[in-house]
Structures are given as C-alpha cells and as structure tokens.
Image (cartoon, rainbow, N blue to C red; front, side, top):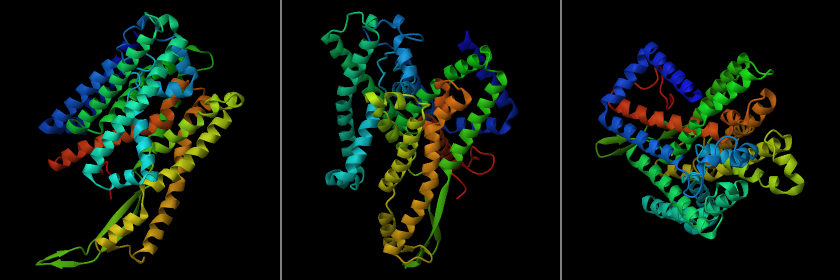
Length: 456
C-alpha cells in the first residue's frame, strides 16, 4: 500500500510539473520529434527495465520467502557499511540473492586494476597510446580480468549467504550448489555488462554508469518512505524535520552540480598559419581544467582501503561504525590523498604542453616547453586542493547526516559518497548528450537560460 502511495504522489508531482512548465512540455515535444533520439531513449529504458527485472530473479535453489526485510541477510546489509553500499549499487539485487546480485562492480574493479597497471606496466601504457586498437585490446583484458574477479567474489558471496541464512538453501550448501550458483552469478554479471555495452552503443549515455545509477535511484523511494515513517511515527521525529532533510538534500545536489561543472580556463593562443589561400590559427581558445578531475574514483579507492581495519580485531570498534570519528577522519584523509594521486594520473601537463607546441599554440606570457608544463602543473595543484576537500566532505556526509541529524543509514547514503556523485555525474552526462541532439536540430536546449555543458 505504501508503494502505491509513493507511486501516486510521484505521478501527481510529474503531472503538476508538466502542467505548470510550458518550457518543459515544449522540450519534451522537441525530443519526441527527433526520431533517432526517441529510439535511443526508448531502447535505453527497455534495457534498464530488463536489468531491474533481473534484480528480482532469485538464484535457483534459494528460498525467496526467507529473503526481504527482517531477514538475516537484510540485517547484515544494514549493519555492514561495505555490503550495504554494494546493495545500493546493485539496486537491491545483492540483498535479494538475485542472479544479478554482483552487478557491474566486478567489472569496475577490473577496470580500476587495468588503470593502475597502466601506471606501472610499460606494455599497458603502450596499449593506452595506440588509439582504437589499443582500447579494444584493453577492453578484452578487462573482460577476462572481470571473470577472474568473479571467480573469487561469486563463491565468497554464496558462502556468506549460507553462513547468514542456511535455511534459505533448499538443497543445502553442497559443492554442486556452490558450483552452479557461481556460474549463474558470473553469467549474471556478464549479462549486465552486455546490457551496458548495448546502451552505450545504441542507447543514450554511458551504459555501465546508467546501470549503476538506476540501481541507486531504485532504492530512493524505499529509503524516502522509511525516513518519512521514522520521522512521523517516533516521538523524537517530526514532519518539519523531514522537510528540513529534503531541503538539505536539495542543497547538497545543487552544490555537487556546481562543483562538478566548475572549470579553470587557461587561455591558449594559436599562431597564424597560411596554407594555400586559407589562414589557420590566430584565434584564442581555452583549456578547461576541471575542479574535480578525479570525479568519484578517490572515494571508491578510499572506501575500499578504510574497510581493511574493520577486519582487524583491535580496530573493529573504531572502523566498523560509519558514524565513528576515526572512520570518517581516515576516510577524509585518504580521499584527499587519492584525489591528488588520481588527478596526477589522468591529467598530464607534459602531454598538454607537447600538443600545444606541436599545433603552434602557447599560453600568453608563458614560454613553451618546461615553463608551460610547470605553469599547468601549478594551476592543477592549486585547484585540486578545494576539489579534494569537497570530495572529502562528500565522502563523510552520510556519517555526518546520521550522527547530527539522526537520518537512517538507508537514506543517508544519498547525502554523499559515491551514490551522490554517480547520480549527479550520470544525469549531467546524459542530459548533455540529449541537449546536443536538440542543438544539432536547431531546437532550444534543455535549460531556459544557458546550457548544461556550461557557458564557456
């Protein structure tokens, strides 16, 4: 009944928004008129629906009646920060013991490993510089490494499930069940990867990111209802406090969008060149350096490392609690360090300087060569500091929301961490792609003033 109530409220809000916003209605009409864009959106929604249905298909041999709210597995999700985060990313499939329980996280893990190998292994560095052929080869390596990661994670998931809920295993914890359950989980992740690739090729947005985002968003109504119920039904809560929480969440989203969109523009002047009867160059352009170039990766790395002390007997009490001081302090420090580390990997001032010199470009007032490299590196170091501090605040925001405002853990995840940045980043990237289709057909953009991709 509560689910129908939320669905009715959401539909009513959408109808009210459409009725009061003529600009939005006109934009939706323009999107529908573009046949290619319409087909891509419908295709994307169809594949995302398939993914969501797969999140509720339980592994054969598991009794679905033993799962759900109040089960031992659900309690473990609520008490363990890492497992709870994995359940959020999988859209609840992790707690449902579904065939898509592991989602795309093994693929993300393999991608991170390949990126780190690109720093240390010359062969991987060479492939990264070979363009399309090298990218295809690295993608193949990533898929094979994903299967290797799954061969470790899938049996571990089944073993944890049996330890927490042995009564759910219809045929018991036999070797044969472990074997075919592992195969099913591996096939489920590979199928999810295939869905992501299809969305990227024939749909709208980045497929893997869309799948992660839709899994996170799918948990929002349930978390919102649980928080509303807790505020209204308890003596310490109130409806006013719930409204304040929603307003704060809206503010957090606004600040996150502003920081993710923020760039530092470095002017670049190109010399004039005359080839035949045409003149090239002679114009001033800009190099946009993002304030948050590392995006969500530092938080992912930091959260993975901060979980290690939670398994050490003497440190379990300090690091197993998401609201604890040492957990949040260590997480913030690691996020700042990893932001500088990852920014140094993806932003190469030497390559930028070489490209400018090769194309006849220079930064006004700065000599080409080493001085240009030092200039770009100095600016990047300065703007990375506020970006890293912002990421650190985002990382510890769920713990602060739970401790200071008394927000439940389910709903607190949306106030920060990877969930917040993934949602904001994926939505912005998808809207940019939709807006590019509108502008190419000479329609207005999605925004009444300005454009989503910025005003530079």
